[in-house]
Image 1 (cartoon, rainbow, N blue to C red):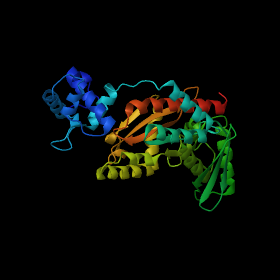
Image 2 (cartoon, rainbow, N blue to C red):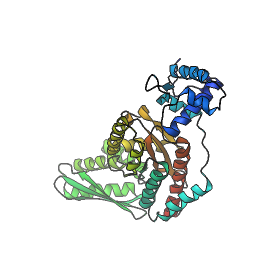
Image 3 (tube, helix red, strand yellow):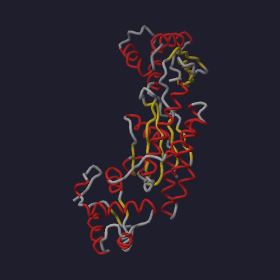
Image 4 (cartoon, rainbow, N blue to C red):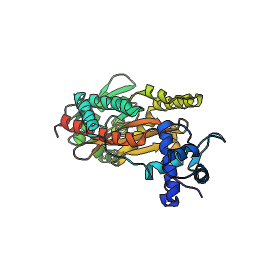
Length: 357
């Protein structure tokens, strides 16, 4: 019988479930294969080494355990870890002292949202023992004004002025035939249609007018606006800020040459910014902590890493960005999951304070 990550725990009897739980907890604690003798000596099940060994063999046949060597103990497979995390992991709340520490650290360094996010990434890396990840928010404030400025025959600078007073500059390819008049026309057109609306809110209407040629714009202006809306609405993953802190913590898990190779692949993964941004963006689609284990995500097929991510939201429950921790698959899920969840809430509180909500 094969077990998938979505299989119910009812496929395991009580004894198998308890032995499986103890083995995975021991592995997550020590990072070493766990044998039947070790589990018998712990005495939690009251079973002999031979009885436990038979159960371990059954669990291995079900795809939940593997053995790195014939004489070694067992390790949970990726499928086994997923089953454990989804159905057997016991997660408690953070202690009040830990909650106060996270709140105070994020607030103390939260003069700006960028400072709060950087502190959150550094704090998660230190507390969780992996690398801390924070995806900066898509700018969802309403726009006030848009202007296009030619800076070379090939490039245009788009200046976006938001209602909250912030300004973003976006460098764009300049379409052929873009005269100063066309740039001014495009800026006036967008300023009129985007004023008081977010980029995402106005995107469909603007592109509809361009597609049906009801905008009364020349071809160069239409091309500039189409390119701009495609890049800006919802955020451009190539431009989104991804804050990574604590890469050196990942080296602490290195115990063999194979581990060192895995960490090298993980460092390569972290440099693929677009892929990491897309992964973090998956956490923005719904509230709650998301857990990606090993090759469940193609980005980590070689490094075999786990990522624990949660969205951070404002007081109106709008998802603004995401933060989390990346580390080996034997990361301490029971500790890291509530830590990531609470840090996301702490960042949301700072966000509300900075925006006056």
